[in-house]
Length: 82
View 1 (cartoon, rainbow, N blue to C red):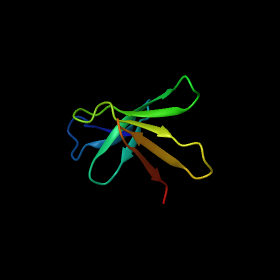
View 2 (view 1 turned 180 degrees about the horizontal axis):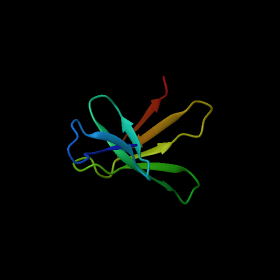
View 3 (view 1 turned 30 degrees about the vertical axis):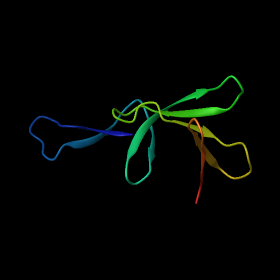
View 4 (view 1 turned 120 degrees about the vertical axis):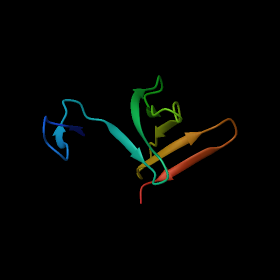
């Protein structure tokens, strides 16, 4: 991830690498940085952390195909890599 850090007297600001990297999910219409966690059953989840979209959970699928699963009270949405 790069952060724009303006140097005194320089324009435009110069991109500088930071010490920390971020994982960002970009769905076109919206994007969010995500945090990851390992669930008690061994699966991995990514949780959105951007204001206004905090707390959406995407579970990494376990099949041969790379998928993300989002669940609500009645539905399961599976997103497959294309």
